[in-house]
Every structure is written in structure tokens, then in C-alpha cells.
Image (cartoon, rainbow, N blue to C red; front, side, top):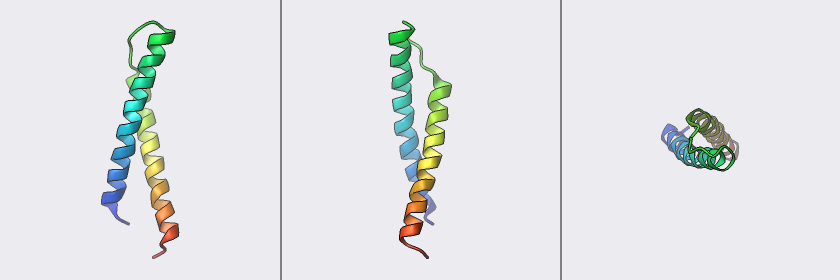
Length: 68
């Protein structure tokens, strides 16, 4: 297993999910609550969970495709 690829995949998914989560919570609160507030806890939690799950899923796919 190549840990460098797993780590880079995690960081990539984490960053993209964090940016999208920040944008979505900001827009949601701006539109529905009429306040410019970013829910950092929800954004980080979502980014960490999706980063771990999608990274492990990618490792699992490659392991099943190329058994060693």
C-alpha cells in the first residue's frame, strides 16, 4: 500500500469538501437565517468523514484490482 498516495487523496478530498462545506453553510445561513455565518464544525466534520471514507474506498478498489 502506498501511503503517500492515500495521504494525498485524503488531503485532496478534505480540501475540496471543506471549501464546499464552508460555501454551503455560508449560503444556507445567508439565505434562510439572514446572517453571514459559517458553521465551521459541520464543515470540518463533513470534510474529515468524507476524506477518510473516500480515501479508504480508493485503497480498497486498487487492492481488489491488483491483489498482491
